Image (cartoon, rainbow, N blue to C red; front, side):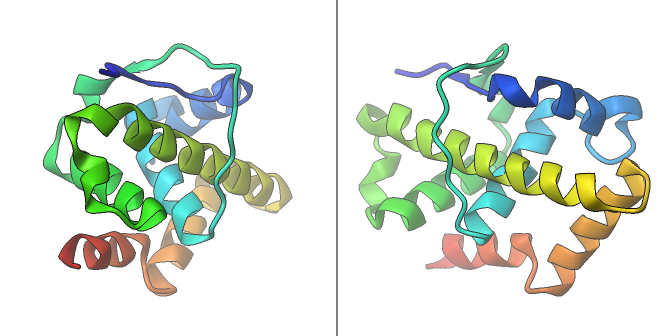
Length: 144
């Protein structure tokens, strides 16, 4: 059974920037959850091999985090049994790959922005909320 969530090593510096000063994301976990939702919403799932320091799965123990992981995995494979204990590693891998895709999207958008990273990230979050909202998508998935 998996007990850690991997994060792509190539985004170590970017994740540090996203959580610097804790202005938008308090933790790497928060940034990864947002990135996974963004990656899922935009259909960007990216495999990776090189990992930074993994995050303990217990860090994702809140109801929202578990609902996000479960909803993304179910929507991705179309099978609610992906939530079974014997498929935990598959569910986490799906989350990790959408998070990697979301980080790619974020890095690309923030790199093009004429604003500071904080302003550009805040604008991205607000744009996502206006365009159907990532939380609305995940909530809809969780409802059925």
